[in-house]
Amino acid sequence: MHTAPPRPSTEPIPRRLSLRFMLSHPAHIISLGFGSGLFPIAPGTVGTLVGWISFLLLNPYLSPAAWMAVIALGFILGIFTTAYTAKKLGVKDPSAANWDEIVAFWIVMLFIMPAPFLIQCLAFFLFRFFDAVKPPPINYFDKHVTGGFGIMFDDIVAAFFTLLPFALFRFFLG
Image 1 (cartoon, one colour):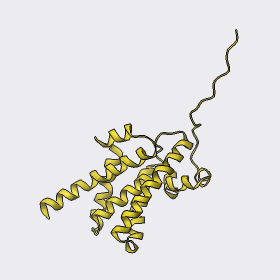
Image 2 (cartoon, one colour):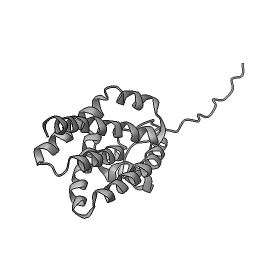
Image 3 (cartoon, one colour):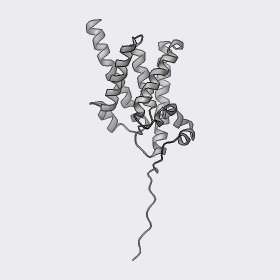
Image 4 (cartoon, helix red, strand yellow):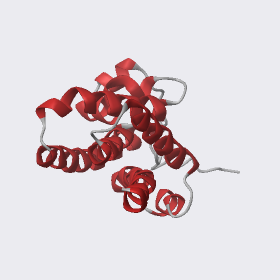
């Protein structure tokens, strides 16, 4: 009895995360949040923290219009870099690819600033809640919108949900 040799898989071989992997291509450096995605515990939270700190460091030098341009370019860049990293890792949406958290949290910070530190903390925790729990419709986009656009878009929706209570508070209480 003759058996045919196994067919080669078209699926990418899953790879382990390492500094070497990140430095192997510029797309990995960006999509892994300049190394923040390498944290073994809560890389999304670490990425959000990088987004928060980088916003505070860059904000004195960027106008709101410049921020919108940076965010738009960051989103477009993220579509390609996160898709490339996901493909190389062999995972649909790797948790280590946290450029999406960084860009999405820039949006949150742009719309709440200037805000006291405690309000910034509230925004951080609200964003982490929406990004981690993924209530509807965030979970829909997470499951049904694929590729780099999907990786980036569900975090943009989480940013919108984070900003909603702030907008409602300002609307009703000034």
